[in-house]
Length: 211
Image (cartoon, rainbow, N blue to C red; front, side):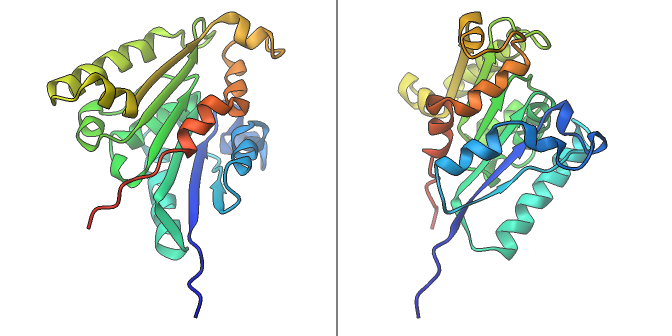
């Protein structure tokens, strides 16, 4: 009997426009769930419409992830999380609660609200991408988050190369967005969805399974 090939799982949390009260399917305007299909045709993609940007939606996203892992043939070494804008805030809370559930986390055009101590213990890889002059958040929040997490890893004794494997800060200049037709650098964060360097980093991560 042939054993079915397991599927990777990608959970992408949308920003303001994707909240439930914006209407059914409003979350699908972002490019992340669509572009993700190009990286793995054996992947289940979930783009839930959130209730808020806080604990409620964070807990719901965790439960959704656990449900799919429990009820579908999921490759637990390839479970990915992404959050855009407010969805990134939600994603960061998830990383402060259950980072071990995910292989890697991509946060775009957002700020960090989660517990960095919990994340640092799990060492789940994180990629932080934002515009230098993000019109909603600025880039200072994520720069500060990067430094705090970097310092926690140094305290653990990790080397520079080891930290680079699990922590990336990617701050893009104005020109990156204007060249792609975005006048607003916050909504321009959607450009990261078509960036092979960014998305390739996320889906290139594979969790080492412990026996």
